[in-house]
Image (tube, rainbow, N blue to C red; front, side, top):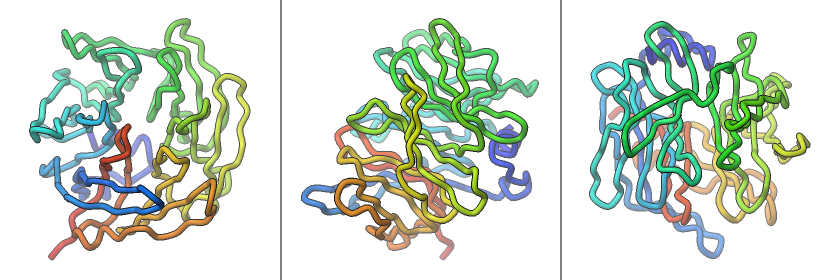
Length: 289
């Protein structure tokens, strides 16, 4: 199933994806006074196979998609105790877990054995689950508020940008030819997304989900789409084993801030930072000796 879902979302060959062995790494992060320092490196997934798509539930808890018995399910990792809890027990595979605002619940994309792919809500108290949207094939998503989802939806072998209300179940298409990286922009009422309308030059753009207005923020690193925001408005992206920062307010250029090759990590993709800005989770591959 994991081979199928990545082929569906990203156009990767099944053969290429089946060789990937990603891990989720955790660091302490210090960005005070313009610094960018990573320390206390830890491999929190430490698992053979696909471990990916981390997000912080809170300052002390990380969700991610991990491999268990050949299937991808959601893991909840406690930073204080270093413990893992599997929280999904369906026949399908779960991906891209996120905390739902103001609820003791998470959302995740589920791919069932029959090929049906929907975004689900999972109650953390009783384990019950139900579809949040049953008409869109959601690949990736983020929460704008407790009732509004911004998502990348599979259409005609590409991803389209949608805004959906989970209460009245209305969906509105906002853009086409986008990437997988969707994020609420700190201290704004905006969401960022990656525009791929130009094959060789991708753009980070902002969307106001309420008005539909979009604006250009900057170009991505060449053909890189994974990113995250810091609370001060800076953007982080990675290429191979190097992290770069774009300071939207003070220094709007991409500058190298850290090499994870020093930690034996390469091929970085997903990035996420804790709400308090003190922890960072990164997906990558361990370098071969």
